[in-house]
Amino acid sequence: MEHRIFSTPFSKIYPMYVQKAERKGRSRAELDQVIRWLTGYDETGLQRQLDAQADLRTFFAEAPRMHPNRTLITGLVCGVRVEEVEDPLMRNIRYLDKLVDELAKGKALEKILRQ
Image 1: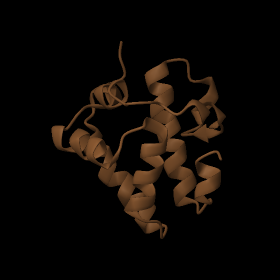
Image 2 (image 1 turned 90 degrees about the horizontal axis):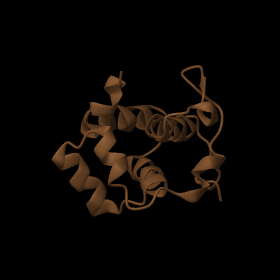
Image 3 (image 1 turned 180 degrees about the vertical axis):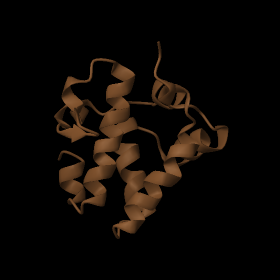
Image 4 (image 1 turned 45 degrees about the vertical axis):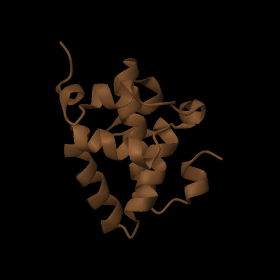
């Protein structure tokens, strides 16, 4: 059976990411930069996905270019090791969760973006 998160609209999750970042003193612009780094969307493409209320499956399937360095994202998200998640879509969702966590924890953007 497929996980229900796959059919959740990205536009429902995005405001929670914004709140999490802003609560910790980070900006929406920084959050968007992190999302664009991971997915390859530009500002217009990201906004188009939000406006279309694309589900997470579509959001990641239509991503222009998943960053090759995303495999450097490791660690725990909700008690699960990101690098051990087998389903590629779930792994991409966990990568995004991990990046948002790092942003909220005050990590420098250069480190978050694996530069």
